Image (cartoon, rainbow, N blue to C red; front, side, top):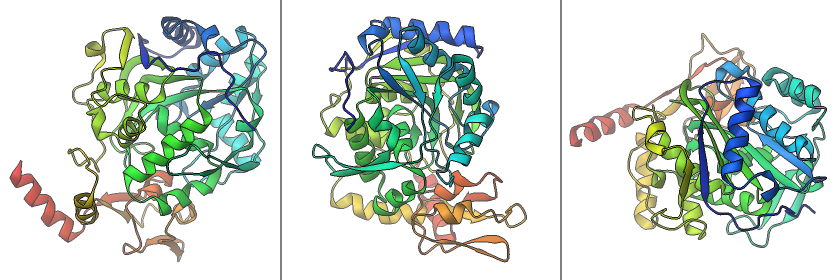
Amino acid sequence: MYRYQGVNLSPSKSVALVGCEGYGRERAFEAVKRSIDLLGGIDRYVRPGQRILLKPNILSPSTPDKCIATHPDVVYAVAKLLVDHGCKVIIAESPGAGTIYSAANMKKAYETVGYAQVARDLNIELNEDIGARDVPNPDGVLMKRLRLIEPVFNVDAVVVVSKMKTHLFTYMTGGAKNAFGLVPGMEKATFHARLQEPEEFARMIVDINQFVKPALEIMDAVEAMEGDGPHSGTPRHVGAILASDSYSALDVVASRIMSIDPKEICTINAAIERGLLSEDLSDVKVLGGELEKFIVPDFKKPSTFIGQKRKNGRAMKTMMSLIKVYALRPVIVRSMCVGCGKCSRGCPMKAISIKDGKAKINHRKCIRCYSCHEFCDSHAILLKRSLRGKAMAVLVERKK
């Protein structure tokens, strides 16, 4: 079984913040190396000879300009740093977005995103093993058993290379959320069905991270995604590379750059619950660049953003029922729907069917997880409010 065998076993909660105004392998390598040097150097986290799983964010086969996946130049930079240190690197991911976890689909994803070329140039491995393993997770708070892709169990350490993006369900996807890509293929949909509240979903994400214990986290924030991420947002220039040995600390700094209160991010709150961060987040330290210079004050939040801190308890259940009415719901644009079936296959509640070559949503079954919106490559799914939701939105706007 996989056991983290890195060097630094106690995350410092320091986050290195380095400017990187554009892509290009040499520029990305310099920024990545500097960020990790600020943390103490690569030898603090991995040893020569170790086999390292490099975990990017693919989500779906897309070209780098879409800002959906971690840019290949950043993946190259991290991989080269590891290779130069004497590590054996394997790039592994299980994309979401309704993508069936098969060797053929993985090859297509690696090639389209640009990681296949990275692997050829550095002579490193691309994972095509689509096996998965069920394992006990006795330290998990929510998930006492996990099913993860096979490569996790055949390496000495995991290094995560995430992408700064918004997310319709969790508001932000970064270091913590990237670990969800270690759940095999379409099995991700079952988690949305079981864990319909963002807080519960976040506790599952933290359980996965605490099992895997990534040795190092690097975030591509050169070009981020704002708006309705993680798939249908738009690129936004930030010009930064972030690095940390703590996925939760990394996300705290990333959310601040995105002008989102960290306490609005459910995975950060789950980390605080777990004692991984202090309640006031004072243990998160920024190294290198001045955070204020990188903050984007008008960073566009997802259209599902409510703008108030989530609370636990009985009141939260009442609030969630009201939120479902208020929340945007997915609506099919029939003229744009190609009937590919990705949304139907990926819907955790089986609320979507394909009829007469077009998708159809049963909104009574819909839990507003927005997976279908995430899956749709044709942008045929819009998010709109029901009549009751529109009425509630009017009342909300009047109170502002």
